[in-house]
Length: 244
Ligand SMILES: NC(=O)C1=CN([C@@H]2O[C@H](COP(=O)(O)OP(=O)(O)OC[C@H]3O[C@@H](n4cnc5c(N)ncnc54)[C@H](OP(=O)(O)O)[C@@H]3O)[C@@H](O)[C@H]2O)C=CC1
Ligand SMILES: O=C(O)C1=N[C@H](C(=O)O)C[C@H](O)C1
Image 1 (cartoon, rainbow, N blue to C red):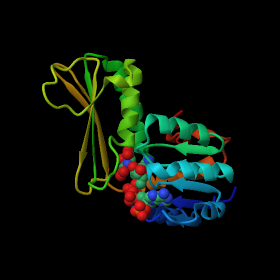
Image 2: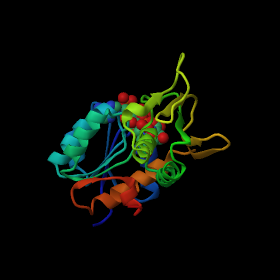
Image 3: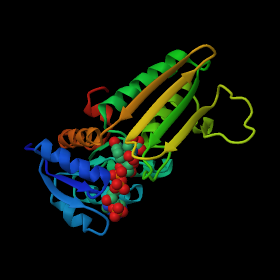
Image 4: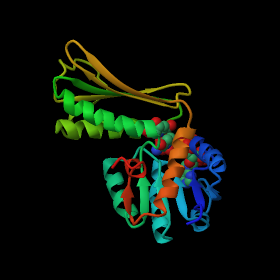
């Protein structure tokens, strides 16, 4: 296929702007730029693949329209509940879809390193995740942190009941069947994530720092170019990068 025509939803936002710049750099045609109040159906009809970086509450309608019009989908929004994410994933599977909480190559390697660390280090090493983002971010914990936590829980054979979202008051001593998550917000931080494994005598920290949203935008557009050649189903960035 020639370069796919991209429809950007959330185009006026921070990521929407970064996507438009990246599309220009990559010579990818942008067929429509859409925001709240625009005619999404008409805009989506103009393109081959829809790239959604709008707002978690908007994604259901974007998925509905992409499926109705048989368009490829790249979903970047975060902040969905587990139930909403399951419903959206089932619906999006009708068309070729990539859905990732983070489109940077570095974070996708961080996922693999975190899985390995959680597996090798075992329950003697207390696992905590710390993330920091700009003051404008609307959801917490970040989608990236949520994925890091899923990986640690999977490797430790724990359920979501093990998660401790911050700590306050007389919490008692830490047990080895809990995993902490701490969300910092401030200034213009693009996105920072640390998976920490602390034992008696040593601590391993795996940290990723994004300094430019272009890294997410270029990854999402790479996913857009990849997804238009795939069978219907929901993929993640590991598939796009050939890591799975
Ligand atoms: N997966 C990844 O790699 C990354 C994911 N993200 C995620 O992307 C999303 C956007 O982030 P960011 O760009 O910083 O946010 P912004 O708030 O800067 O941008 C969101 C844009 O979406 C628009 N919007 C809101 N509701 C709708 C709607 N119903 N239909 C169409 N457009 C709508 C907003 O318009 P208005 O302002 O008028 O409401 C705004 O222009 C977040 O969920 C964020 O977590 C961010 C970075 C990387
Ligand atoms: O909202 C953001 O800015 C970001 N959101 C994503 C997330 O929630 O993980 C990815 C990145 O860290 C920036």
